[in-house]
Image (cartoon, rainbow, N blue to C red; front, side, top):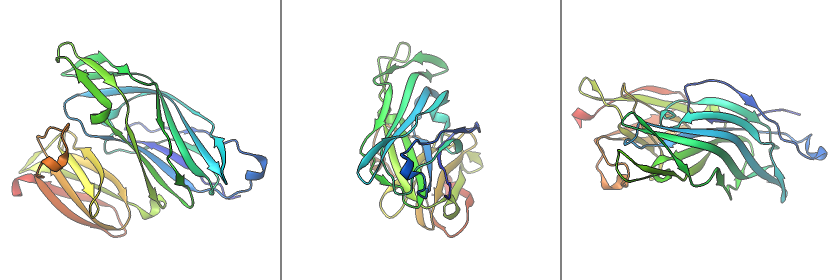
Length: 276
């Protein structure tokens, strides 16, 4: 049997791997498997410094020919700063699934969380300890990449003032599936500047004809990473000094860049908002 793994990938600076395998029925052991990469990223929020979330485990369900199976949970037991995830990708662990499987549910179990505002750390109340995405309905087939966008804007709710805030976390994850393996998807990376100065905490989006595929933030050096994409035409837009709790459609981008992916990574994009 050709063994290929699914990789759960989080956008982190750290690099390590944890392995977990699926226990299936004996008659399923001879079935060919495919590869899926799962990416955890964040939607932007520039009003807080850090959001540390302690993730205990990852679980999932899938079906084959209408019969449901529980995947073997993978223990994680580690805290991650969700806001620092933008622009990096690291393999956390791998699991194996039959190629004919349909992924039906994804679950992340969260133990606790803290938020840092103006260098002051505050406890976060968790509305639920399980982040459960039901009705995923993804046919694995030849494999691909499953991106989990952690939408901080809709997940984090702050009440009161900055000196004594009450903070509630109700995690919102948006799954997006990119078919195909990593060898036919290419990295898009660059920097945002204002003249000669880097622009930090700018919102950078990438879109196809009409849909925003991903949004991220520039780091302290103005650098952004939008992930990997297949060949095609894309539009990159940059927004600086905006209220990210509002819809981006209410704003005019500070800069727009058209790019074409054609068989190789694009890592030298330089967008100068002073020229537009």
